[in-house]
Image (cartoon, rainbow, N blue to C red):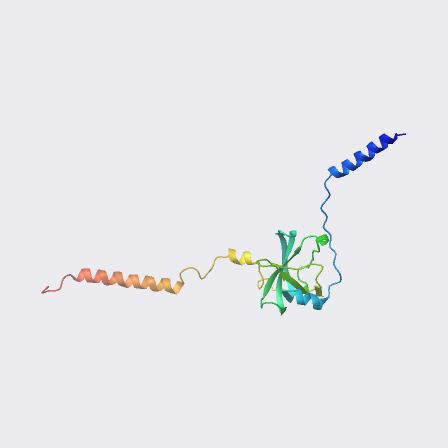
Length: 186
């Protein structure tokens, strides 16, 4: 059996050990049942749309995110658009939201200045249909579009043909003038 001093030393050692270990960082999602009217009032964007694709992303606030590319069918609040990227935290413990490809949703999203639209579990997002036909060529990621060569950036074909014809006529005229030689009396 430990003496009183021994027990006190053991307690102090246990407290010191607990203080030496840094606490784990824990993220948990906790929010009340979202009210659609309140959510629409604070949202920057409310759309009905079909999820065309999703990919992993990164955000300074959330860490890992999932970006959902949505083909917009109806804008209920916000700017008119045909597609939008809506990001969500990557983990449900951080209030992340998962939307499967080819599903149709009512989405409430907010946007920080200069940021993408974000949504999560604390918004009243609602699955409208588990099947949605999204035309694959109609909706694409902006970086994919930017990476494509601009077919209109070069010289249009008609302009090129006109330039060749003009240069050819000028060359023909110069050759004809030189072959003709000087005019009599000059």
